[in-house]
Length: 290
Image 1 (tube, one colour):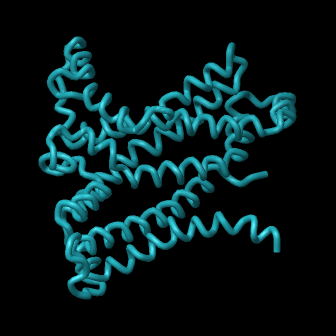
Image 2: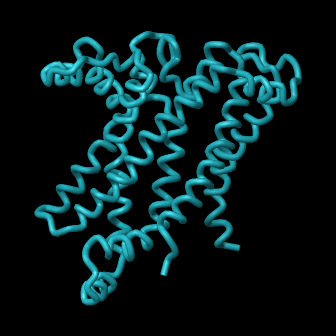
Image 3: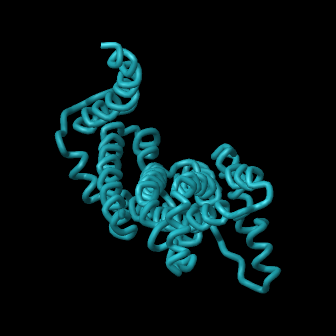
């Protein structure tokens, strides 16, 4: 009985702040629910049907997936390379690891404000460098691809070091005897990495990919702070509006909590599906564990 009492607080808190909001959001999504007046009428799956024909939601979802592709793949690749570098015999290894983790310690709002100024269309540092190199300045807010790239740069700068330290911990847990035996057999560094390191990193890579994907699908602060115009929620033409920004707009600007809850439930399902797909894909790429 005592073990159940010890773990009960976790499950109680999880049910209160995790399960209940999710179930309640599903309940609200079945109603035409006004932010101030509350539920007005039962619509069943009407909000979900409206989502299927909502062009703005489709665009917001496409923006989210575009930014996700620019963040998850580079984060994982650079994190593995950084971890391999930090696993070598560097001087002052603790200082290097702290330096890699420092961006994660910064508040996301501060990162958003700094990078919004770096990517400013007129006086931004990035455009100043481009002009110095003889290149044409980029309107980072108005151009759809450029705005996605700017947001992805913020996310990658902040979270790549965190993922690198997770991969580093997994690297250091691999028995050195395996690498020594492979070296004796004549395997080079690349062969040892692909045949030993990468397969043994499979559980960690699955974790990093899934958490990066979940974070990418929940993007809100970075695109919100990149927007120079108040109240536009992702650009004047919604060129970098993410699904979470559209959820915010539906709930608080349009005051339609039922529709916003339908968006939230749809995103939850999408996160689950992408997590499963990432898990299967990562297992396939990493290969079977020996």
